[in-house]
Amino acid sequence: MRPTDRTEPDAVDRARELLRPEAAERASDPAATDAGYLDLLGGELDSTGAFQDLMTTRFVPAIYERYWRPALARMVKGITGPGMAEEIRIARLLLGLGPGDLVLDVACGPGNFSREFAPAVGDDGLVVGVDASPTMLARGVNDLRAAGLGNLALIRADAAELPFRDGVFDGVCCFAALHLFADPLAALDQMRRTLAPGGRIALMTSVRRQLSVPPLKPLLQRASGVRIFEPDEIVTALADRGFENVRQRLAGMVQFVGGRLPPA
Ligand SMILES: C[S@@+](CC[C@H](N)C(=O)[O-])C[C@H]1O[C@@H](n2cnc3c(N)ncnc32)[C@H](O)[C@@H]1O
Image (cartoon, rainbow, N blue to C red; front, top):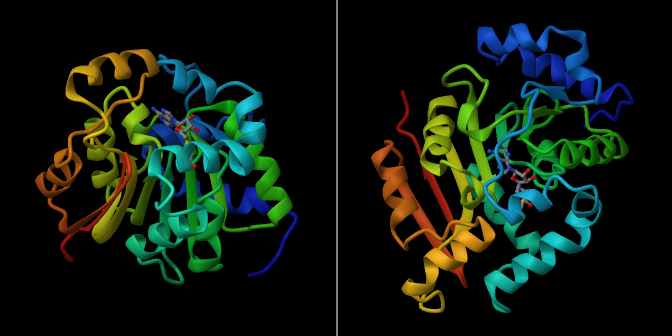
C-alpha cells in the first residue's frame, strides 16, 4: 500500500461521501476535524457504567492495545481461547475482506483492529473506525499516523446512531464492545442498515456460560455496566435481521459471531 504522510485527510474526505445528509452537514464544519478525527458527536454519551467510563480516561487508551486488551481478553476467553493474532484472523475471516471493500469498525477504540483491516482492502478500499471516546480516538490518530495508512478514517459517533447512509459497507466489525452499549440491539439495527446486500458482519462479545451463574448476572451487569448475553441471543438477533449462514464460536465467556446478508 502507498505510504503517505497526508493520511487521514484523504481517508476522512472519502468517508464524508458515505455520510447521511444531516451528518455531512455537521462534517462540513471545519472545527469537526480539529482533533485529527471527524467529530460528529459533539457532546458526551450517557455512561453505561464503570467499564465504559474507563474507556474515556487518558490512562486506558495509552495502555489499551499493548496491555489492557490482551490481558483482559485472556481472562474472559480462558487460557485455551484465541490470542490477539487469532482474534484478528477470526475477524478478517468472518468479514471476508478483499481489495476495494468498504469496512466499518464499530467501537474501534484506538483502531487496533481497523489498522489490521486496512492492508486487506488496499488503496481502493476504505476502513472507517467509529468510537465515542475522544481519548481512544486521539490515541488512534497517533497510531494511524505512525502506521502511515492512507485508507483509514476515524470518526466520533454513537454506535446506536451511525451517521452513514444505508447499504454502503461491505463488512461491519464490532469486537469487544456490544456488551457496553446502552442499547445493543439498536446498534445491531444500525450495523445491518449500513451493510450492502451480501455484506458480512463480525462480532465478538460476552456470553453467559456455566460460570456466570444466572442469579449473579444482574448484579455483575449493574456493577460493571457490562451486559452478559444469553447463549443464543446474538445468533437469534442476527437471524431476525436477515443474516444467513450465522456462525458462533464460544471461548470462555466470549462469543465470536459472524453472518452474511443475502446478495441483491
Ligand atoms: C473494549 S473497547 C473495544 C475496542 C476494539 N474494538 C477492540 O476489540 O479491542 C470498547 C470501545 O467501545 C467504545 N464505545 C462504547 N460505547 C460506545 C457507543 N455507544 N458508541 C461508540 N463507541 C462506544 C468505547 O469508547 C471503547 O473504545
